[in-house]
Amino acid sequence: MEKSMRSKWLEYMLKIVSPVLENLSTGSLHKSIPVAFHSCREKYILLEAFGRSICGMAPWLELEGLEGEERILQEKYRVLARTCMDQAFNPKSPDFMNFCSDGQPLVDTAFLAHGILRAPKELFFKLEEKTQKNVIEALKSSRKIVPCVTNWLLFSAMVEAALYRMGEKDYDLVRVEYAVNMFQNWYLGDGIYGDGPEYHWDYYNSFVIQPMFVDILRTFRKERREYKELLPAVEERASRYAQVLERMIAPDGTYPILGRSVTYRFGVFQLLSQAALENLLPKSLSAGQVRCALNAVIEKVMESRTMFDKDGWLQPGVYGLQPDLAEEYISVGSLYLCSTVFLPLGLSPQHEFWMQEDRDWTGKTIWNGVNQNCDHAI
Image (cartoon, rainbow, N blue to C red; front, side, top):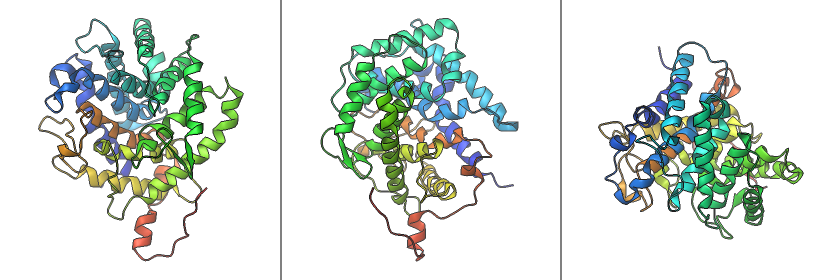
C-alpha cells in the first residue's frame, strides 16, 4: 500500500532531525555531530542544529488529536524533545549550549524561541520547573548580544516574544518595538521587505523576516493595540509573498537558487509552509496545489543520495553534497533550518491541506499549456 503524502513528510522530517535529537537526549551531540566542515563554527553548532530542528517540528509536537501509529511516534518525540531541552539548557550537561558568547547564538536562540512559541505546551509548560528556569535564564542571557540592524532585530524580538508567552513579566518590549518599527520602514512593496533599507535577492523574507514578523505581532497583539491594527497588513504581505514562493516552484520541483544561505535547502519555503499552517494562503491558491507544490520540492531535494553522510547527518548543498554553495558562516548545524518546510504537519490529518485532492501548482499548470489567470501585485 502506497504511503500517504503526510506519512512521507513525517518520515522525511524525522529522518532529518532524529540524529540531532537522539544524540542530544543522551548528552552525546557534541561528540557526534560532524564539525570538520567550517570547523571554526564549532562553538555554535549545537544550538544551530537543535534550535533549527525544533523550529520546524514544533507544530507537529503541539498538535492534539492524532491517532494510531502517528500518535505513538509523536509521543516518542515529545518526550525526546523535552529530554533534549533539559540537556541543552542544563549548565552541567555535556551538551549545554552557547546562548551568549559572540554574536551567532542570538540567531539560534531565536530559532529555538520560535519553536517554543509554536509549541509552548510541549516545549515549555510540560518541562520540570528547574528546566523552565534554565530556559528563561538562557534566553535572557542572549540579551547581551547587540543585534545587527538587519533581520537580526527580529531575533531579539523573537526571544522577547517567547519570554512573554512563557509568562515572564520582565520581557523587553523596547526590543520588539525597534524591530517592528524598522521593518515597517523597510517594507518595499508587493509583499517584500528589505533586509535593511535595500532589497537583496535571497530568501531571507522566508528564512526569517516574514515568519518571525507575523508571529511576533500575533503574540503581542493583545498587549499593543498598534500591533493588532498593523497585523492584517503584515499578514496580507505574507500572503502575497507565499503566492510568489509558490510560483517559483518549477514543474519538476526545482526552484531558483538565489542569494545566500541556499544550503538551507527547502527551508526557503518556510513562509509558504507557515501560510498553510496559519491560514494565510491567498484565495488564489488551493490547499491541494500548495501541498503538491511543496511535496514536489521535498521529493526532489530528498532524492539525492548525498544529502546525508553515512551516519545520517545533513551535508552542505542544495541537491546533495555541494560544499562550495555554503558561505563561511554555514556549519552542519545551520543546515537544519530545512526542517521548517514541514510546518504543515502541525495541521490535523483531516485538515483540507491534507484532504483536498491533488492539484497541479502554478508552474506545472502553465508549462503544461493550461490557461491560467495572470499574476498581480498588491
